[in-house]
Image (cartoon, rainbow, N blue to C red; front, side):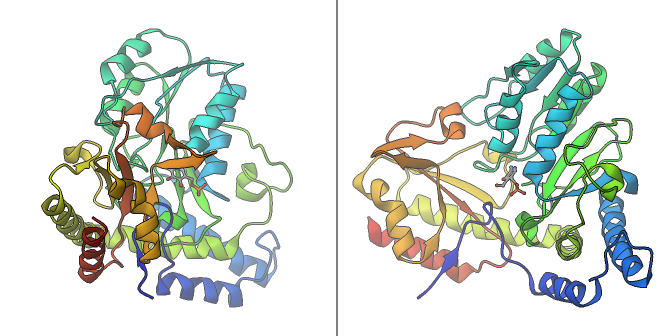
Length: 371
Ligand code: PLP
């Protein structure tokens, strides 16, 4: 059966080169990186090489990169420690954040004030409101994502960090959907914390990293050994780190060519959809979206109701912006925040450089046949 994978914002397939790097690591790095003998040292070296490569490409210091089991773990720690350790009194965020950020913030509500920025129907943040909030000089953490995972919207990160710098607010950004998709550079020092995840850029699952600016000393939540310079105890996931290292290098090195190619797929798909039905809409601000995410809003109809089911039985993997519980359709928090029109059906298609033009043709042909 034909399978077309258009859910690359959920996760991406491992690349052959990444698998090879992980296989090599399985053979070579069985030593405990905390051991001082030969086998420990070669494992430790592999971990430090990964850290060095990531730091160099992001233009930060090696000592500012920490490995975690996921972006979720890293974002949870940062948010919790900003309140518990750095005495943040207020968090400014938005309703468009990933649940790993929103729920971590929710947990701190009894210890600090939380405010959510307004967003318009194209998912643009109200930056004037941010500026007004920042006028109140209490110790603040701003947590706003680099790229939205449901809509692909790129947030104006440099305007945000400039405002934060001006008002001495801390700034955390979830860059999970940004790495390899948009240029990310930390040399300006305006970002205090940034989190990322390997499986979104063709690396393995269960490994991610955080950038923690050297001026912000936060405490660990997992205690034990001195791994990750005491930031995250537990013997390192060496094979995962080696896979992430390879995937990260490739994602940065080939970013431009991958994104140009993905843009051509996305344009072809958009044109094909509009030829089918001019009432189809694309969610988010088209001027400010990443190439790999396209959220398509289909007009209310029986066709739209059945589209996820029909895509799936035809081997096409995409993602719905709503879930059904007890027979009632619930739109995602993001769709609710941008006031997605009731009755319309939003489906997120997300691409990678591994997709082909033939797959786009096949998907369009199938969607046409459902109508
Ligand atoms: N943040 C964003 C924007 C995401 O898309 C995801 C993954 O779905 C995460 C965080 C969570 O990443 P991880 O799977 O590494 O916990």
